[in-house]
Length: 112
Image (cartoon, rainbow, N blue to C red; front, side):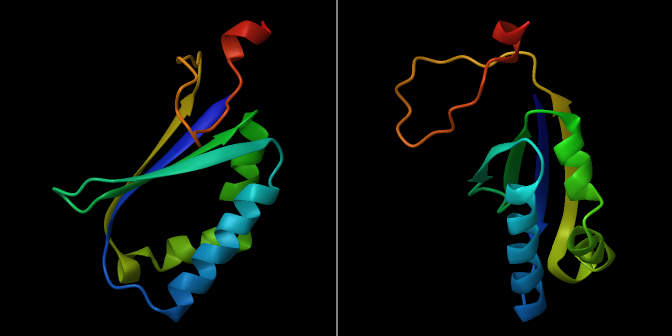
């Protein structure tokens, strides 16, 4: 399993941002092996972290090459005060199952 964490400081959004953001979200959900996403905000810094999960690297690469994603990357300075992307291979997931509404991600360690 793979994850992509997109951490950013938002600036002012406009209609073009909102449209591209919706198109990118739809493309992510339609990409091969998409498993889900979560979003977090740090109230101290205002930074937002969106974490996306895929069963394999193929879906992640599919999203990275999507035309709307490429268009947004060209304009990021308009809408973002900075960003960082962290791509990771997930080795293991676990928990007590008590998180209501949380993602139900497969445990890659159990598959092998």
